[in-house]
Image (tube, rainbow, N blue to C red; front, top):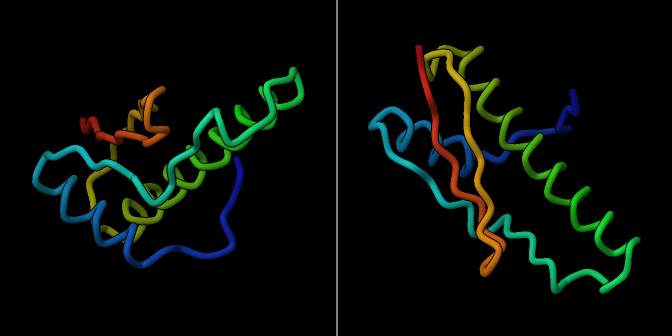
Length: 94
């Protein structure tokens, strides 16, 4: 698994508050737009890699919150909007 070097306090806070209340979060500051990459095979690969890195970061933050007892164990589901490039993240517990 990919490890982030540090945790974003703001993202940890938002995840804790939203997921504790059973809400979905939108991670607008972490959007990944297809238009930000060249319209080539390599551009498509870079775009997919960027989304995978962001997804790994979200999972790492969630794992940290579970490990520290801030949230119950579960899985997060990440859906990317093709129009805005923003991830919607929700948690499934139990």
